[in-house]
Amino acid sequence: MAVEIAEIKEFINVIKEISVYDFSDYSEKSFARRIEKIIEDRNMSLENIIQKMKKKTDFLEDIVKDITVNTTEIFRDTKTWEIFKRDILPKYADKELIDIWHVGCSTGQEVYSVLILLNEMGLMDKARIVATDLNTDVLEIARKGQYRFREIDEFIESYDSVMMSNPKEDNTFKNIPYQKYISINRRKNLIKIKPFLLNKAQFIKHDVVTEGNIFERKFDLIFCRNVLIYFKHELQNKLFEFFHENLNEGGALIIGRHEGILGNISGKFKKIESIYLKI
Image (tube, rainbow, N blue to C red; front, side, top):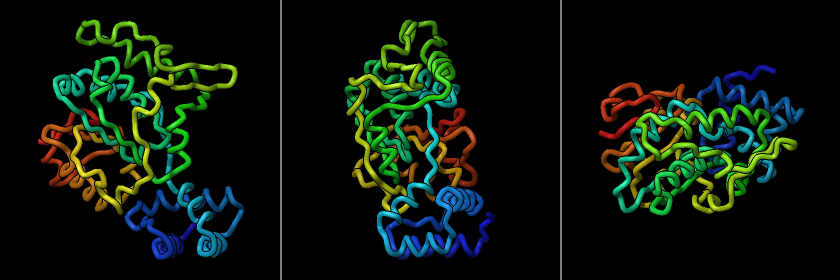
């Protein structure tokens, strides 16, 4: 069922009126796809969904969870992680404290990817990590660190690409098998993060669009991968400005492979693949 632009605007306005959520600057095309899927999955008309949201707060929260897209994998887009491992993280070896913020962290697999790299470089104990998302369900999954994978071998291939590569011919990442950090149950298609990595990050419900930086500090690394692609250009630029302001000098913003910084704000960053260094 195709949803009209006028219906999308009404839907967004209702949510804005009855809750703290504001989806006004989301891409209408992306938003339409999410609404159409909600209508199909719930077998309800948009009018009925709106009426039920007005009456039931729990239902509204469920719809908001349905709207937010949750796509993440351990070491997704391996080239970005290889560059991050080789060129970015070593710069923090002598820093007393490394502040990291994962914006739109989803189920936390990106967070654990960073923790694995930090641990191998002896930096995990000096890292202070917050990971935020609108969706409380995915945050709970993130805290448990257990994931269902259909393609276990693809996961192992991504892990090996990042952790077994040795571009500088040193011994930092030589032969680090996935079993050090992850347990695999092939029969159930499950992977589970080892307990010593759990509780290293603080997972918090938070809306970066409406709440901004609630942490009263700047960050060395900000991850916001595959989130901005769902926003309109104006909101993207607003957030890029926000991230620039909330990065420490020389800090890095890591975004998705299909995302990019355009316009005047791009002059405030140095680009390396999907990594933008504050200048």
